[in-house]
Image 1 (spheres, rainbow, N blue to C red):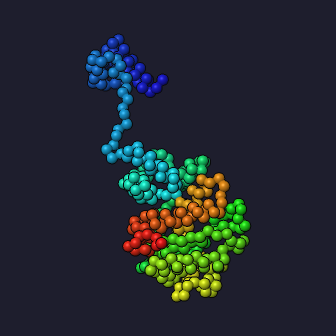
Image 2 (image 1 turned 180 degrees about the vertical axis):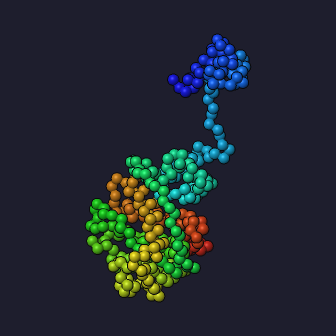
Image 3 (image 1 turned 90 degrees about the vertical axis):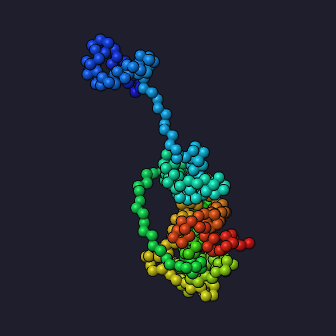
Length: 327
């Protein structure tokens, strides 16, 4: 028996009691106002006792509600890229391959809330097939800024431990560099010895950055790193191109090189965690291929909403009017 059936029986008892004891006494005993009784009585006389049954009301349709097709595409894009937040998903849906859908980040977030996918942990849990733990809300961190005026003026470089993979002779590390003006990123996945990356491996990426900036018409002026052995002041600086200065941050202040630290977190959330959730067996070549594909999308297709980029792509700032990678 449903709640509607109970309410229907209650109203039938009111009419039965009104026939036995009168309308006033029946309404007083059943707790119903007499005007309500007479309104129901007029409907019963016209259409029968079934009019006393509660009517099912349909869910209201809001004029600005997203269509089912748009909601399905939002969910599909979020599950296909579980590391992206609502603003990134809204930017990606505006691309031609997703139909050029214009959806606000707030609309994306509310859709994900309705489907229970409003956190990265829940989306990754659905992809990986397990239940995500509860994530307490976090306070927004402060936003320090580095003042640069052109690409190549300051490039941050650092290393990130990925893990140990089956079939590799040593631990796998990610060497990452980012231009602090355009947010253009470079990264390389290397197999190292027990001590971690060497000066030769880190300086190789720095020379690659200098070469790509030179092809775009810019010069690598300064490289910022931490005080690790892989960035030894003399050995690393000697391997840099001529005219490039090497600076090291103060010990215990990793936020000084915050651009590359934030890039590590972005790659971890949008590339590595989805990859580790999808793949049953991890291989070095497969991870390197995923990293190259992600960096190309990061630099040439992904809209950046930083203080300088302001919705533009990093390649637009590095390559100027060409807006594409040089051949």
